[in-house]
Image (cartoon, rainbow over all chains, first blue to last red; front, side, top):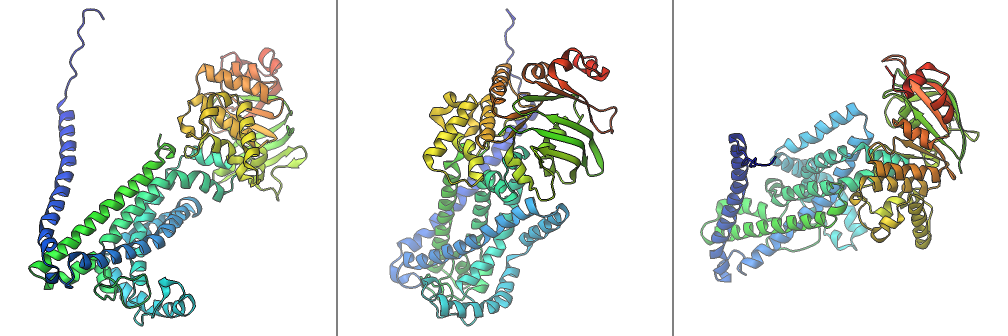
Length: 311
Length: 259
């Protein structure tokens, strides 16, 4: 090859177009995110600097947002605690236990759950689920009342934090189970056979090969579900019986903190001036909470990246 | 330890399709038995029927008998899970659990058997298994690192360590070196020669030199035409198969005049 200069790399039009549009899409998402963040921060400032007595509730913006943030986290945590094991179990059943034809039909039904508008879940929660939870709440108050979660007095309408959390759980269930199903289905046959050849039963094989392999995917699915639970508005606004400013771990009474998104939806039509800025400040808190949760989830996944099976 | 296997009139089916027909053969303990033959002739299917791994595919079943030291492996009350705990298997592509450390990979089978074992005993067993697989010196200082960080040849020796850690009676190897470079292949072959002192080894291979190098007995599988079941054409001492086979098909195959 002496005497031949290496030709400069050819930049083809298609490559340039594709690289440019991909880069543009990447930048666009950052611009949108920055725009939303800037809007939230700028429009929160009036509420942050206003005298405490002028803010709704009369004790300043942090006393206003605090209980809402608390309620948001409680509702989302209930949803996650209920929906994650259930979603993983559904995904395992569909990928490793159900006959193929049943799995296809059932998978379709679960996906359909994701397509139901949240207002419908709200109606279902308030008219169907809440009345049926009332006897359970009475029972829980009587027998489990020593646990602060069930201290009571039990709600007579069933419109409690626990009901709201269960409605949220049903809403995020399809997200978690659909993503878990995808990752479980992608576990290489090689790894499953490795476990079976060692004399693993089906459940032992799932514990050795399937669950560890799908772990980061399950966490990702749970985080997507959590995102929806944190931001859910209408179902909570319909279901939850709210007392402004409450902060309690008592899940079965009719005195509950609202959630940020539901509170904004309920209060916004009647708000003006500083009230609006206060609501936007609560929105900023929700935005920050979501960011923190995602960073934490990313950290959990990365902590064992070497063992993820992706390398 | 190191049991003999007697197979008689074995037919293997996938649904209605008969993949392997009419195999009768005895596999001697403490020796290496090689199975050779063209692709699709059913030798891997036959191998997987010995530890009932072929049943992982829906619709797979056998007719006939597989008896290990008097125990019918297909008896009505025999759980395939128990069969697989007695008959270990090494696959064509190295398949350590990527989510586990090197140590946990070797310990995986022991923990499955639910034998409660003191940490020091388990440490010793893991070390002995890795030593038996000629891998100990390469991994002793990184037992807690992921198994996926090892080279292909190391991963395959790790899989062998994992298989022998549970002290199986028989070790099945499905083309264990075909995804490896020549040096790693040699390491695996040396290992087989050492392991046959303790185990009954059955190996499927496409590499006839390998069969000639490592095995005492060789079986030649063939199928007469596509869609027909594979059959065990000839089974004899490796020396006889490679020098003076009875069947013309065997001679054609080993001399490369096949098809």
